[in-house]
Length: 282
Image: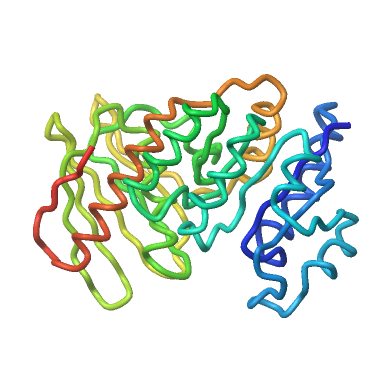
């Protein structure tokens, strides 16, 4: 059995609380042989529920390591979590990627595009395979979405800066032409976003807390397509991570990760100057 090591800002958070069971279920279904064996959290007490790292590890049947280095040394493969604290990812990656072990980095990949490029540079420096994605990329509704024009992507979440990555990754995954500019209209807690590709196709994003994720558009022959995401996308993500750990093959073009980060940067800048076009820096 291969040992997975968790690196987190604090261990008791939604992703760390759910990933071990999904990993177990995927292994039972596929015959893969992985388990979360080691973990380290920079902050001992979770601000979410007050659970300590030791309490989390006891509950999960995981060995708590006193240092990040020990997790890296003992584990076969590694997962950098801290999904709500992407500003931590570069510091963790500077140590984790130096071990050359296959690594998954949770969403949001980085706080900004420049940091994202710095993490990719570390991967190249140490020749370490890694990838990052929003779990929404693995929605079944996205996987068999036909090519469309005038894409619309909708969804919610706790706050725009953290959860917009889901909308962006969905849009980037199904749009062959790169986005080159965006603008944002602010309406209370809602964000109505317009994106334009280099070939002048437009896409719309609607962020609204509590809204279900969905996407739609028009096919080449003018037929409307609209799909609400109802599939169980997180287990599909977990299987993709484990397959990557097994063969080292990236599940999609990593250039899409950098494009998604550039689009997110532009959207966050456009949010501060509503209804003004902002260029996407590649």
